[in-house]
Image (cartoon, rainbow, N blue to C red; front, side, top):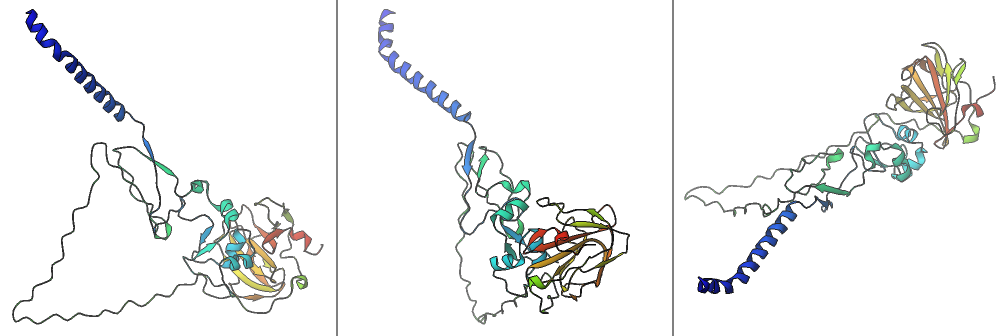
Length: 330
């Protein structure tokens, strides 16, 4: 028995080292399985653009049906000439549905919803073995690219090799096929957002504009600089009362596409002056109409408001000013 123990003793260190090595390997594998999820940075592939949530890139407005350059500039507090210059648009400022207009970084930050604060190319977290989300279609046909990671221990999936193309074999006695040339489809012309161009009547200089009151009612709301809900004055009245244009000009917007204004009319009086008439019950003029001071352009109402009234704004070079500073005293 002593001889047997002496014979087995030389192999004991080797067995011990093998056991230690095997145990270390098991511990390492267990630790790898408990490793925290990895952060993978999604980089846009060549020719692919990541967009902000909501479908609009920061600093860009996509033209919708019924939009005008003046209405878009009015909505974003811009001078229409600045917006036209940014986008290389010449008079009469025709824009097209789906066209993307540059607004500038600061104005884009003020108009984007809170959910659009994520920057393109931010780090996305993926868990090994987890099923990635389906790509989401974005406005303008842009699709968010997704990186799929293989599960631990599995090789990355590969596409099967493409079968080589084989040339067709001509049958004896058959006639050779003739290729048919198909002409390319005719290009579809872009559709203007607004069908009627603005009138090209000569407008006076800024200092030649003469103002008058657009309605005869009592003032029930005053202007407050910097308050986006008080960029003009509110004049009370009854449903159907006359709304008159405050100075000679051309109608550059007539619609209901600007949230908070209801049925709205915007009139251009000179290169620097615009006036706006909101909450109407009925609009009586269309875009492109030339109007004269005192002309009835709408019927008073409460569209987008809690009472019958006219919301009247005056803007100089795109910036709201207190209408009381230009209207005559009464």
